[in-house]
Length: 512
Image 1 (tube, rainbow, N blue to C red):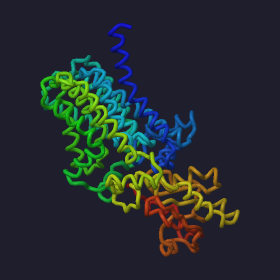
Image 2: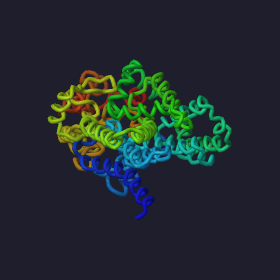
Image 3: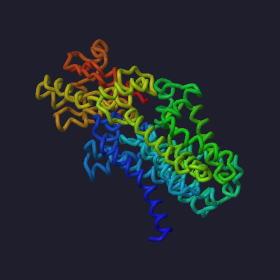
Image 4: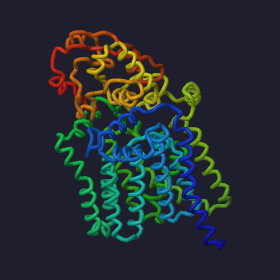
């Protein structure tokens, strides 16, 4: 084997080794906790394919439908899909480092920094559009890195294709487009801005995104209402310094050293001048996030390019220093050990009781980005608890119905998690069909449900008595570690509605 072929092999191992390691980690702990609230929702969306949904574009539902059609909808199956997307993002980030001139060490350090960062582990361990968002940002960042480095300007067409498909996954791709445009202007890269292919790429992205925009228009722009309601009444609004502090914690304190180095060299180092637009883009995106009361994790994809630049900078610095090999070993050890230490806080690894003790040992209190009370678990982990138990409690209430009532009954969930849990376990437990007025469940409507017999999860008995002639308690759902608002949850059997449920339906809609 020649020296060149040996070096090429080492780079391939550095590129794919961290990606494969992250994939194995996710596979090993895929079933540590139960199904996640949002996973229940995406499975429901996948069963009702459309060009859009109240709170997200259609791609995640389409991918879920194809994947589960091929491999089933077990917990391991649905969680391998985002894990594969995450592994791809790790590899593409390493490729960005290689394009920036990085060698084996820089490629490996990039992959380890990305793959073992707490926010990345959290976003890629459950089925959601966030895992695919990381991959699309990584691919777009890789193309932008090449374009800024003198690559063929026809790459703008590929960029437009990635951006358009990425927008069909999550509209946050718009943030990347805006940030890159500001970066090109600030870095005075008029050579790229004058390229006709840039505008053709933008047109291609718009064409690919158009079906979802048509869906939005036909349905009265529900996502706009959803975003407004979430910002006003659900999401916690953070002060700028608190938002920035969250970035350090979510990316990992030692991992943050790498991306801060990357941000510094992109903005100030002569060697990285050609990629300065990427550093400016980060600040432009950050300003948008701060001005829109975004959740802190929304900024996560923007760090992929910074980690790559930081790893290359550290490689360059250690190359010119005495004891450079030792410095590199220290950098890798710091990233790996820090990542493993924070991993149980980011994704399910430890049993609940062990996790609680570990989090307290590290001084971590349960957290949430929403205005909700918490128990001993953070919302992310609490939303993976006891969904089957909820469905079993619905089964207890269903057992109190006559055979005739069962044929006419429906289950009303207050949110898409409750409705999704009933739907997932209904075939196994013999439950009535679910309905809900939350997000896209509202648009799916009543189905065959007449409201003659309704099992209502939660709500107040006196309020239901105004709507139904008879209300009795069918069961109570108790759980220790679910979200507190779903603990001690009454399941009411409501019979003989006083008004037409179809007429009442528009009044109980809630998009948030």
